[in-house]
Amino acid sequence: MSIKILAVGKKHESWVADGIARYEQRLRKPYELSWQLVPHSSREGDAARSEESDRIIAKLDRNAFVVVLDERGRNVDSPALAKRLQTALEASRPIVVVIGGAYGVTEVLRQRADFVWSLSALVFPHQLVRLILAEQLYRAQEISAGRGYHHV
Image 1 (cartoon, rainbow, N blue to C red):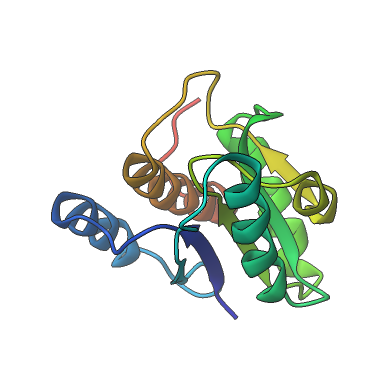
Image 2 (cartoon, one colour):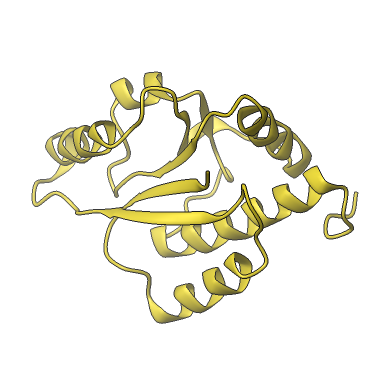
């Protein structure tokens, strides 16, 4: 089992790919990451949000523990994130993290999520969010394993 990330957009830019690779090399099962990119909609606004969210929902396993990244979500610290992920893994639920498109995700997708997570009150470019997410998943692994990467 691995953690799947569904991200709306194009492939990683080279600087992002390098950073993500750095953290992916450190990850161990069950925290291994797989990425699935969902194409941007050619539409705008609500129509784009709806189309992209429908594409994402179609890729979700019924049993998956779904985390949706959303600026309106709940802001948690790294130990709390590690605990949420560990609980899902111990319940043998595949974890899927969703990074929506420029217009966000629909309320239907937000309601499907087990956890709606805000990285910050700030808004970040999607490429940067991918890198931050990879680092936070590595940090969660290290916290769950009781290793010294995270300092309180």
